[in-house]
Image (cartoon, rainbow, N blue to C red):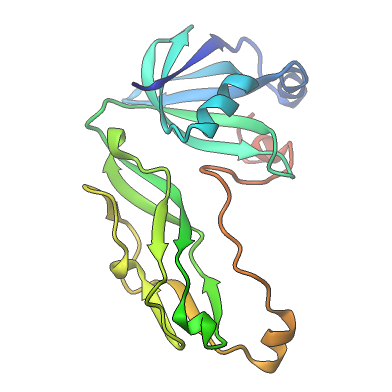
Length: 211
């Protein structure tokens, strides 16, 4: 069952109004798709947090509009803590959608044990899949990643029905010996953040043309 998010119509627009809504625990949103008019909406921040914690990508909007929707884009504050704006895309279960999902590593690389540095090159990957089959993340097993080797897009085990939009030869993760400079600057592999989390300034959406 899809998570439910209650929404109300957004009557006014603009940066100052968006900030006022956020101070009140609300998040500006927009609903589009299926060749229907765009609708400005407002959702409760707590409700969005709950949806995100459960890894939901398809939600049931209730209140001012009633439809199934894909969380197409979610903009976060500079610290990646509070959602600032959400884009909802109208969908039906069997619609084909393109969506970016995080890439996460699992396992221990033998190349790393041999002194190599594991570098996650691709922190998220764009997939094409049915709306009701959008995965929370793509897991990449590095249990067989040897020193001097790489895993490419074509090597990924994607969820059933999903297709990578990127070139199959694009590197996802590598394991290489560090250069002298690289060894000094080397840091642990950083796993990607939660689904859809994109840090950005509060007014980034407005500068890009949204609220």
